[in-house]
Image (cartoon, rainbow, N blue to C red; front, side, top):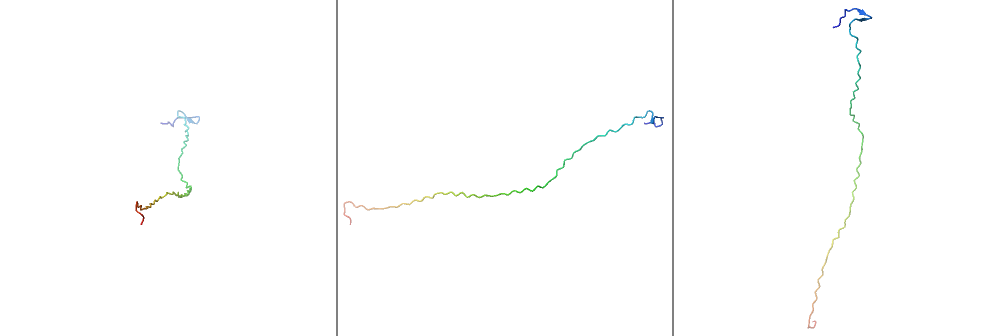
Length: 77
């Protein structure tokens, strides 16, 4: 490939390829990680009981029967 037996001119061999300067590429990679944080949360439930009083009338009925004796044309007793 390379002929290292060539004469040196100015510190370089004649006919050898020029040195290639490597290019530097920077790649930014991002990693997302979930971190769990415990956050105390308290819920207080207040139960209210409301009694609604509903009054329903209860009707009653009574009946009285009377009886009378009427004597026509005859004296009483």
